[in-house]
Image (cartoon, rainbow, N blue to C red):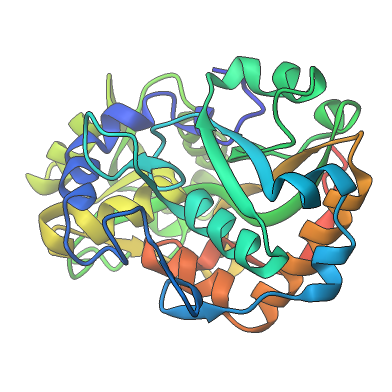
Length: 320
């Protein structure tokens, strides 16, 4: 997987959260069996919020999209909690990106039609005109900004997951010093822990006793068994797993006030074709409305990751 993509922060996220995903996708607590957005005659409700069309934003859309009534959106499924199948073997979708797409579509008065697409083919497909946009937990970076524009909706990095009740009272990375901690091998999270060792030594707390595992699901088992006090993985994966594993009774997510989006967080954005600047502008304004009325936060909170929601809809925010 591409190292600039939000997903590779934990190379095997799909495997790491497989049990949680399968449990959650069949959970009746989802907004609807159709993927989280309840469409009615009166409009669309997403994460418990009724979305109303903004006619001015609709009028600002590119003529071709107004005519078709559809924004063609590429997404790489599954990748919990951003995009998932409601049921294994069926095509209906759910997740942060899908729900946000339905909310944006309702606000703009068009349909955001999601189509599965392998990640490495997403940007080329947008460039070729096959898709208008992509919503797939894509990290906004300067290299990608050369070929697509981003409207940024979240910040995510590495997070800390602990056993329910947080028996070791872990609140920050510093609290991991001198304690056994699980992490998947060959990930950015392992690099994060290694880089923190010097600070642990400087503070006299002793180095983190890092235990690496082939898959994050193995680190989760070690956490359940009390062999480690924490598991370090991507914050979205940590939040989703804490929310869904054993109906939310197995793990807790640590929210460090100094790193609410996670450690070494990067902006994630909706990628839009550079040939459609009017679409980029309309999406940015619609997203800001969804931020202001609390919808974005509710969507993220539904999937256990409220802390990654941004407070301002920015465009091409990354400078890296």
